[in-house]
Amino acid sequence: MADVESFRAETRAWLEANCPPSMRAPMPDDEAVGGGKKEKYKNPDSKIWLERMAAKGWTAPSWPREYGGGGLNDAEARVLDEEMHRLGCRPPIRGMGFSMLGPTLLEYGTEEQKRKHLPKIVTGEIRWCQGYSEPGSGSDLASLSTRAVLQGEHFLVNGHKIWTSGAHLSDWIFCLVRTDPTVKKHDGISFLLIDMDQPGVRPQPIRLISGYSVFCETFFENVQVPANNLVGELNKGWTIAKRLLEHERKGIGGIGERARERAERTPAALAKHYVGETGGRIANPVLRDAIARYDIDAQAFTLTRQRTAEEAKSGTPPGPASAMFKYYATELNKRRYELLLDSGGTELLGWEGPGFEPDNLRTTRDWLRAKANTIEGGTSEIQLNIIAKRVLRLPD
Image (tube, rainbow, N blue to C red):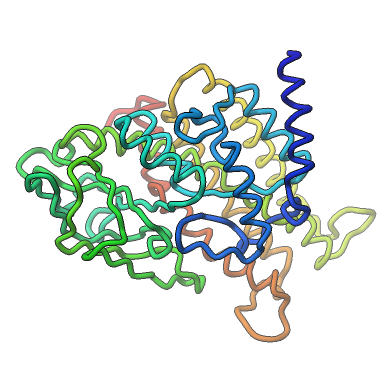
């Protein structure tokens, strides 16, 4: 215990001395850092904060030091998280390299792959995206048709991915490809790491109803990929793909907490502002009841995730719980945005132009964006099927 408290004192002092004041405030969406060669730091302090945290390995505090991580044990990582929360520190960087590929490489990657890619994730030098879904292979991911043919020392890749989040901003993509079309669809898939800065790779943003271009189509036309970029065994990529999806769904399961980190715009605060209050309570009793139920459910969900995280520290990898959290978190996030719109009334129905506050215009677009949460990372229906089969043991 003394060692942990010493670490807490040291961590608190370091954060106080090194976290820039502007990094101790809720983070607007346009200041979020994803890293990579195309990163543009709207706030210069964001780059300073990232560099300082990366130098200590605290962008990936639990990863081994030999791969650039912080090498912290569970107790120390928890202290770091608590002290950052106490001071209001923003996360220095987020992305698929941290939440999805990194943990997967630590489990399945070769030593060469770990030493090549993990340190660059830690420093934010390289940004990753995910090449899973295809126009004809969404919910039935295993039916994917993007081909990779082994030709000596490299694979020749041809195909078309869709809904590749942030592909236009990314440097590398981890990709599922079909390497044997003659066997059962789950058995002929491999997991490749592909450098996007080469001929034949073409990301194309998809404009969404929200007005954003978060997702892309990504085309591969005779792309040469070194054979040593294969993760795991040839034709055994489905096992790796499932594990990575567990990490992805676990990450999406924390979407509500990340939303609360970025801003203080809660349904209750917005309702008091626009609907008014009586005796310190929201004036509209129906809206007040709906917000109270949401707040209770959100707090219960947060505590459940924390309890599960503690249980996972025994070494148990993500499993069906990731599907449960992904499903509930995305449905809860939709409720949050519906309540924000109910609270703001016509003020949150604006799209652009004068007469609307910028925060309200952004919330309107975020409300539309939240609809995609129940699709990305596996639809809500897919998560319910996983829960039915693997948790409830229901028959097919």
